[in-house]
Image (cartoon, rainbow, N blue to C red):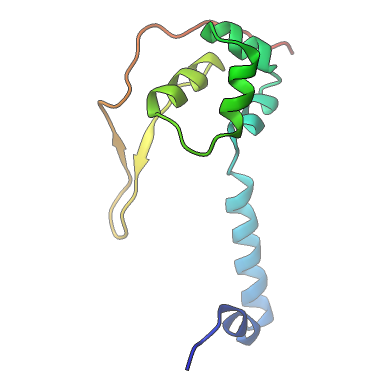
Length: 114
C-alpha cells in the first residue's frame, strides 16, 4: 500500500502543521534566483554586463539558465559586488566551505545606486 505525502500532512496536528509551514516559508524566503539577487541589489542587467565586459543580452540569457559553470556564477556574483562560497552539507556533520573552486582574479568594481 502506498502512502501519500498529502495524507501524512492531513493527519498532522494543526499546530504542528502551522509550525512546519512557517519554517518552510522561512526557508523559501532565503532562496533567490540570480535575477532576484540582482534586483534586490538595485542593479540593472546592463550595469552587471558592463562590469563583466559582456552584453546585456548575455546577462539576460544567464539569468534564465538553470545550469552553468561555477566560474560563470562566481564572475556574475562578483560583478554584483559579492563573493561566492560553496557550502557542502551532510546529515550529522557541520557544513564545510569548499575551497579551490573557481577562484578568480581581481573583482570588478561596481556601485549600486541608492
